[in-house]
Amino acid sequence: MAGGIADMEHRTASRPRPATPTPVLLVDDKEGRDALRLLLEDTGYAVLEASSGHAALALLRAPEPPQVVVVLNLLMRDGTGFALLTSVARGPALFQRHAYTVCARYWRGTADIGPHFAALLERLAVHFVPKPCDIEVLLSAVAAASRRLAVAARPWTASDTV
Image (cartoon, rainbow, N blue to C red; front, side, top):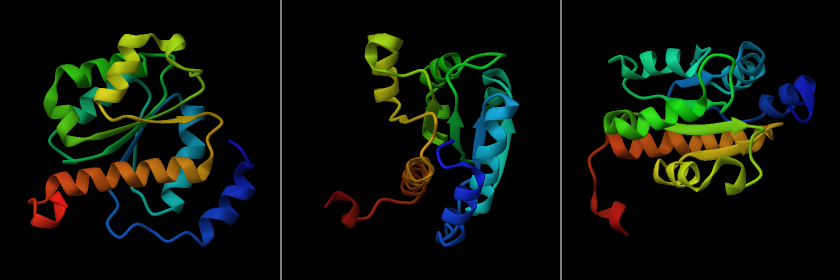
């Protein structure tokens, strides 16, 4: 990660904590999850972990927690983020209940992933944060996903249409 752990500790010390943070599910190999878990916990998020897309789907289909922000890698040792997001697209409840952010090296544009998967990312409103992750960009993406879930969970008001 750009800046390293010491920089992360300095930058997160003065950051305001989310009022009621949505839990975050990290889906990546262990090495990828460790630094992100520390960053998110230091910022006030409750963090769940899954080592594969298969394990993540089991957690996402469970009734609790009702909503999570999923931060996933596209390439892992056991299952891929591509497969997880394809499953999400097939099950509307998974999209409606949860929000998704991809944090991965595998991205230089649509040519790398193909137009079908690029369209899927757009349809699912997936944020993309390239690795090495810029801490502020990742936290901003997680906060935006959390806000989307909070808005979706409450009744609509007249101010939502303005």
